[in-house]
Image 1 (cartoon, rainbow, N blue to C red):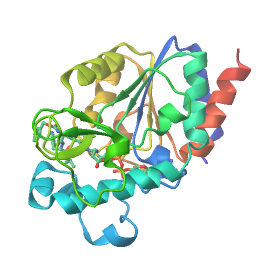
Image 2 (spheres, protein in one colour; image 1 turned 45 degrees about the vertical axis):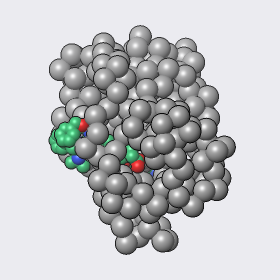
Image 3 (cartoon, protein in one colour; image 1 turned 30 degrees about the vertical axis):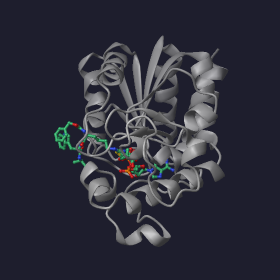
Image 4 (tube, rainbow, N blue to C red; image 1 turned 60 degrees about the vertical axis):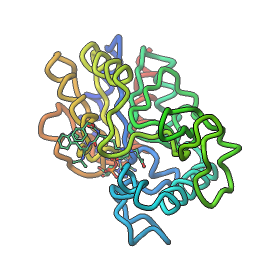
Length: 249
Ligand code: BV8
């Protein structure tokens, strides 16, 4: 668990903050039982490189394999529940003006009650068609062994996520960058800081003078640039931070 003085300092900064921007990665869902992106994908998928499957080329090369990988992940996410880390961030959003920027596609922040969420990489519970982005209902996608054809244009249906090599939504990215540049504190939780452009957001916050706090059981490429590294699991540290902010009220 992180040093008490570091936790105390983080609580002080959060309590004094008018606005907080949070950047989360797969580590915040780990304690819900969702494998992180770079964990060996358990079971059937261990032999595939997730970055190959999560790409337009991967889908073009083998649409059925990629479709089944997302169907497996979507069903897994349906079975899990938000953990104390998600609930702590939802509570923080009731105490402070919080913008929650997530790289995760599992929808668990919304299920925990967070509002003002920016899903940088989309959501595996949403589907759209390859050619025009025509929306396609989850109910119609469920249980299929291979990608259906879009009823409107005939192109293949795919998960509504941002694949490697695809641009993020310019408007979502603009809002996330704005939230990074204008916050008093940025909380960076459960991300390896490897995927761009998400991993640049903490630098925007630091350059703009925000206090920056990382919550992760490991050191990451971001750690040396951030003000505080709270070494530990999000499910333990975030509730402690929010309890401290509540006490100070
Ligand atoms: C783009 C959706 C324009 C799909 C995902 C600049 C430099 C270098 C490369 C690039 C660059 N610009 C673009 C690129 C290429 C690429 C990229 O960043 N590659 C990396 C790998 C080098 N980026 C893109 O392609 C992006 N598009 O920029 O378009 C462009 C395009 C091509 C070329 C140039 C420009 C699109 C990226 C979006 C990819 N889609 N997800 C899907 O999910 O299937 S990203 C995917 O990885 C997930 O969303 C995941 O969240 C994300 C990042 O990983 P993390 O969340 O950090 O998870 P990870 O497993 O890595 O780490 C978990 C962390 O949790 C660890 O640190 C661990 O210690 C910690 N942890 C564990 N347990 C806990 C914990 N923390 C707290 N508590 C715990 N209990």
